[in-house]
Image 1 (spheres, rainbow, N blue to C red):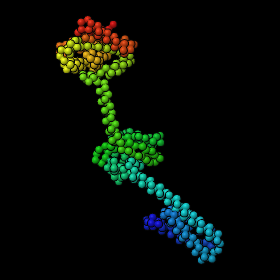
Image 2 (cartoon, rainbow, N blue to C red):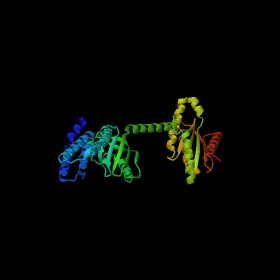
Image 3 (tube, one colour):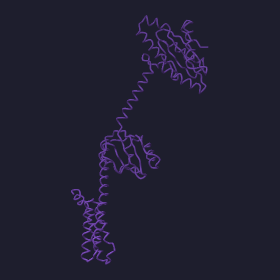
Image 4 (cartoon, helix red, strand yellow):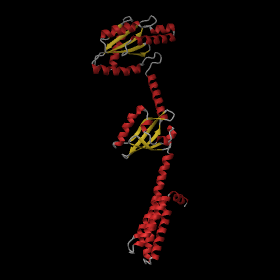
Amino acid sequence: MRSFLSGLTKSRATLWIALGLYALIFAARWAVSDQGSGLAFLYVLPIALLAMELGVIAGFAAAALAFTLFCGWALAGDVSLGVIGYLTRAVIFAAVGWLVGRLATQRRLLENESRRWFEISNAMLGEATFDNHFIRVSAAWEKHLGFSPGEIIGEPYLKFVHPDDREQTLAAVRGLADGSSGIVNFANRCITKTGDWRWIRWNATSDKKHIYAVGIDVTDLMQAEAERDTLLARVEQIARTDELTGLPNRRAWEEQLRLELSRAARHSHPLHMVMLDIDHFKEYNDTHGHQAGDALLRDAAVSWQTAIRDVDLIARYGGEEFAMLVPDVQADEAVDSIVERLLQAIPAGLTCSAGIALWNGSELPEELVARADVALYLAKQSGRNRIVIAA
């Protein structure tokens, strides 16, 4: 009853229209002498109007008024319709008031639930047109971006999108416009009222008239993923780097060897593999101590890195042994201009030996390594401080 009275206060225009219809129909009854004209059934119009606007109670009240007016006309005009006639009209009036009022009440409840869900949802709900304007947004926008709904509605939505994300946002909207797809897990950056950027992940659909979107603030998740990726990259780098020298380790070198073999095969370029070993390192280590030996390995790594080309790769293979890949040079150039520089760059007045193997175009990686290793062994057996080219 309280909601009925409240609705009655807010629906004065509807009430006056309904009263006008009552008066018009009642007057028309006097103008028509035919008892069977059926004008009384026009009372369903104001009944339905009031029931639709105010609900079931108003529908019953409107039906009662209509039946009263009908009875008043019948008595004043001395019209005899019998019990069935009166009962039929009473039932029809009441049924119309109840049915329309019930449907209107259910619709209003659904609208209220929808509006309540729209307002209290933690997600950024929005409705926009295809000409780049918002027509409705939820209160959550202010929570996440700082803009009140009034500051967003009517504004172009691209105004809030990061310049680098606008093209892909427009592409997504075009997909909605032609009905080819909805938007699922589409993320872009939106500006806040303080000038910061927040990552928003969108799910959206359209009826080809409006866009209906649900946005979730995933900034913290995106930052966590970025930190995770950075950490994983760092872990991967550590796993591929020799801790002592900072050079790629054996695992990284073996991966690069396979890549370089594939590249050499595609382009028919020569590829040399070099095995290097610091001469008499064990004696140096025993004489000067392990710390001095570690320092020697670090100094050798620095010196050799500055002596090779950018396309060459040198790695610590194990102990005092190093491996190097020299792509796209002929044998003489590999020996004279590259490996000779490595032998001359060894620090602390020491020497080193080298074994070189040219890939034959078909052998497996381990076969190429074995040939270079044999060449290194021959260089050491031949007196060290020299280069031996594998057969």
